[in-house]
Length: 235
Image 1 (cartoon, helix red, strand yellow):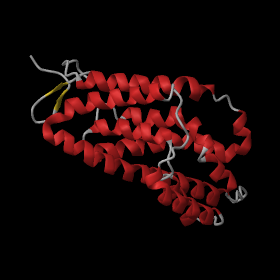
Image 2: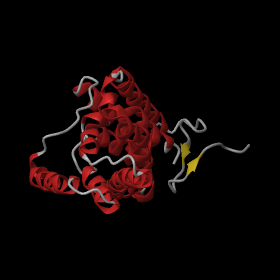
Image 3: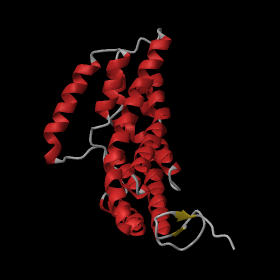
Image 4: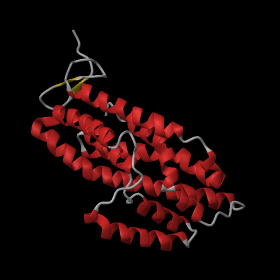
C-alpha cells in the first residue's frame, strides 16, 4: 500500500484530460442550478458512479496482480509495471491519448455509448449515477495508465482501492467543469501536457526502485519470502 497516494495524484493532476471526454457529458445534462441540493447530489452521483466503475476495473487488474504475487513474483511485478509505464510514455511521445480503438471491445463500447445517450435525457440521482458507471467503461488513456500502476499493488483490494483514489482525484476538476461550464475550456491545459507525463514517469521510477529490493525504508523496502513488506529493520 506504499504507493496508494499516487492513485489520488494520478486523478488530480491528470483530470485536465477529463475535459476532453467526461466534461462534455456533464455539459449535456440539464443543469437546473437553482435547485442546489438536487444539482449537487446529481453531480456527486455521477462522479461516484465513475469511481465505482474504476474500482471494479481495479478488482479485475488486482486478480492478475494477486495471482502473480502469490506465485512469488511480487518484486518483478513492480519492476515490470514501472517499465511498462515508461514504454507507454515513449511510444506515445509523452502524450496520453483520450481514447483507444480496440476492436475486440468495439461492440461493448457502442452499447455503452447508446446507454449514455439515453441516460443524458434524464436528470435524476439514479440516471446520473448510471451515467457515471457507464462513463467509466469508455476507453481512456489516463485510466489505463492508472490501471497499470494499480497492478503493482499486488492484491485485489489494493488495486481496487488505488482506482477508487484515482476516481476521487478527478472529482475537483469534474465538479469545476459542472460549475463553470464551457468557460473552463479557457484554462491553461499546459499543466496536463507538460506535467502529467513527468508525474507518470516519476511513479514508474518509484515502482522500479520498489521492486529492486534495496532495503531502503519506504522507497525500496525489503521484500521477505511471505510477500510482506519490511519498511525498516530493527537492530
